[in-house]
Length: 307
Length: 248
Image: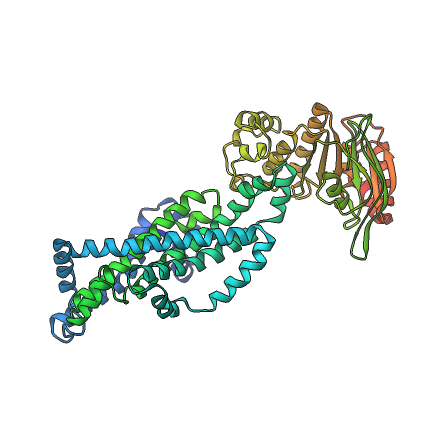
């Protein structure tokens, strides 16, 4: 939801400013006069243009809307059988049903609980490891090499091992989310700490900051932009890990709804669940972007990246 | 490194610093009197900045005796402000009990108190350098070390910043060591000018001219010619070019 929004607000000005040169260069023999006139009589210039050009936001929306329409028509005419893919109308109707019976809210709550718990554990582990590795030479030697080694293992591939270790109830699911969250957070925070500007550290030492002061006022703020990028990756990984984890013997949650639906060929429920995963992921992304804007308002480069 | 008492602010004897095989400082001696303004000239890579870093306490892998006052501050070539702290917070960073009111007093002294609440990225180069000066002064240093602080500024801004430093020095009475490669800047500001070469002080000149100094006065021009010669810029055309600039 936030991304089309940002593209509309971020994209509509460029055509207006970039549009004048081509017609001016192509038709007008006196370009030095025209742009000045266009600048003073703004209302007339843009009004003439929409007839020729569709606003960028509309053009961008036309793709997804067209696909939805195509899907609807294919389902309505029977080209697309319900056993392959349910019609969008069915999906929406099924969504309303499942909200009415309370099944969908319950599933979201169960999945959200897993994601949140796994994220908190993973974030705590990543924070501890990255601070230790980033701030202490010994920590770097011991931790960073190991993290590099473990990263080579695809974390999804650990599901069988996690089942052996933790059984098939909640624990392996939360553990998988935690694992997926740990890597992006660790590497981004560690990288951020290590990229702290040596000149600023020197300036900090010069004004009398001690080790704690340097960490508080120089090193951690330098790591913050990287940490927030890591947080965005971590949250999207958390939902991805959850999708994988919930395929394993779930008795509640969105994955449970999906695997049930699979047994009864309810493609509308499956599509609905996918949409719910997508919306939850987007909401998390939106939250991090808001957080970034608040925390990084000292950074000029962030102004162009509004939520 | 120990604190000095008496009339001298800085005493350095036989200071040697090598980076690998390259000896940058080679048995250097330097003395700065309390309240004295000393400019240190030298070509790029002659070890000026190394000496300043040693006096600042940022480099301790040295041989020789270095005595400096305990309270000393540095203004670097780039302002080195923390971009995530507001201007006032940058000024009092690391100062116990430093608050916005105190920062405001020093920002007023360098003429930019209205930017106390701004982010450093919104400042111009000259403004940021003023904040950097305020941050150095807030510690009320006995020795202020300036490492080419005006090097990156345009000519107009540099002139203003130089006058500001002259004022601040008069007011605070601290010793100043100004590292620069600009002969005129050195002669405009300093009591004494040192020329560094081959890791030692190769030449020194007392600048006995009254302040504010006149770039066109014969004594100024003569001193500048001598310093340029000592710096190895004794090309006749370069000198005559400088003379023309002054006379016109």
